[in-house]
Amino acid sequence: MNPAVPAVVAIPALPPAIDALVDELAAMRGVVAVVLGGSRAVNGGVIDARSDWDLGVYYRGAVELDALAARGELHRPGAWGRLMNGGAWLIVDGVEVDVMLRDLDVVDHWCARAEDGVYELDALLGYAAGAPTYLLRAERTIARTLRGAIEPIGPFPEALAAAATPRWRFAAQFSLEQARMRAARADVVGAVAQASKAVIEEAHARLCERREWVLNEKRIVERAGLGEAHATFARGPRDQLDAWVDEVARAIAVDVDG
Image 1 (cartoon, rainbow, N blue to C red):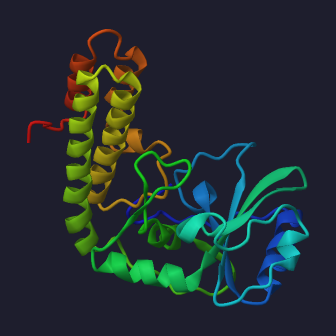
Image 2: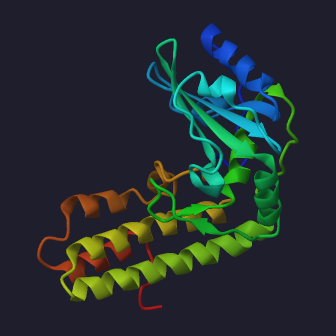
Image 3: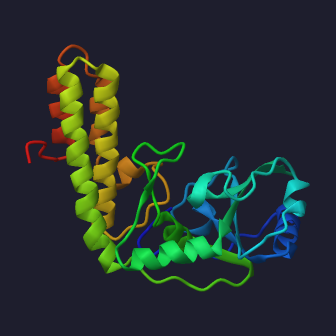
């Protein structure tokens, strides 16, 4: 879903009910563009009969959301934080549709910062290692415009690859050190939590090194070639918690001793 240079496909034909929804979203005052995102927007996405539709609504300034509110429960701008912003989970003609609101002023800001190799991490629900602000640029990269117009975005910035790779790797090392400290105190939950975070942080480091965009943590471990770690976690720490943390470190090839 998040390749460095997404292999775009022809925009799939929208079911009539979803096409009508797109028209309604595009007509809302303040909306600049409605885009298709997710696995349906790029090659290689896993699409089956249960796959939902991801629609991004880019707006600037004040936005009139009555049409979206009339469709179901609306989470207004800011309800999901500064990155995810807001949106709605809808059922349209029996199909799940995720509508995500994106403030273009915020998106433009973090896209520009990513170009300079600068990003921040937000603690968002559903993210173990945190959500980097450059995910807004990743979304722009894969987006397929359905209505309106939005400026194309450039490739993965070299400055971001140079800055984010060592930063993520340092975070992975730090998390493993924390896992060791908690293991020494027989804190099983804390040790496993910090070890899990380390695996995802190392996955981020590898994908940044490869100039591959990340939208979320779904299957990030496999994408980064760290699938071996799953077996280690599946076995669990059992009695020797210290040794188990060492095994995690070996699985992701991170030297916790620096």
